[in-house]
Length: 303
Picture 1 (cartoon, rainbow, N blue to C red):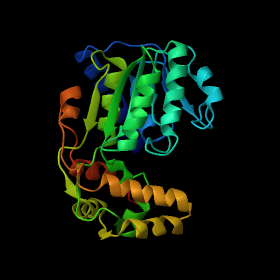
Picture 2 (picture 1 turned 90 degrees about the horizontal axis):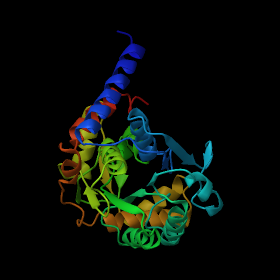
Picture 3 (picture 1 turned 180 degrees about the horizontal axis):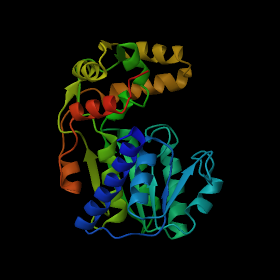
C-alpha cells in the first residue's frame, strides 16, 4: 500500500470512527458552527471533526474566507449570522489584558445573533482567564455556554512553540521540577465537538488533562526516545526565559507576559490529573508516551 493510499484509508477510518462515536453518544447533527481561529491547532481539529460528522462549518480567521479578527469587532456579526453554535478560541490567551472585554463584547454579539450554544477554550488554573470566562457568561444571556479548561498541550512539543527546542536538543523552559499532566489536543477537540453537538453540557466547566503528570525533564526524555535524538531539559528562571524569547524576536512586553504566565501555571497547582476526558468521551485520555510515538511516526521531528 502506498503512503497516499494509507493516508486516505486512515482518514476514512477516522471519519467512520467519529461518526460511530457520535451515534453512540446520541449526538445530533446541528446547523452551521462557527469555529474561531479556524486554522489554529485546536480550531483546525475541531473543524475537521465537525465536517466528518456532516456538520456545516464556518472557519473564521484573520486571512480566511470567513474574516474573523479578535481585534476587530466589526466582522463578528457577519461571521455569526445564520450559525447555531460557536467554538471560541481567543488569541493569544484569555489571560491577556483586554480578553475579558473582548469576551463580553462577543457575548453580546452572540446573543443578538440568536446563537444557541458556545464552547469556550480556556486555560486551566489561570485566574485572569476565569475573569474572561465570567465576562462571556454574563454577556451571552440565554446562549448555552460550556467552558473547556485545558492543561499544557502535548502538541506544543511537536507543532508549537517548543518544536524548535526539541529539534535543537535543548528544551529551555521555566518549569523547574513541577509536574504537568500534558493534554493531547486530539482529546480536547473530541471533547469540544461533543459539547458543541451533544446535549447535557450547558453550564459545564471541564478541566481536561492527560492521565499522567510528568516533569519537563521526564517529558524531554520521552520526546528524545521517540524522536531518536537526545533532548535535554534546561530549567531557567522566568526573567531568563523572557530574554530567550526576546532573542527569538518576541517583543519585550509579550515575552514578559508569557514568562509570567508560565510561572503562574507551572507552580504546582495544576499538577493533579482529572477524569473529565473520560467523563465526556467514555474513554481514557491519551498517554504522553502514545502522543510522542504518534508524533514521531507522523514525522514531527524529522527536521
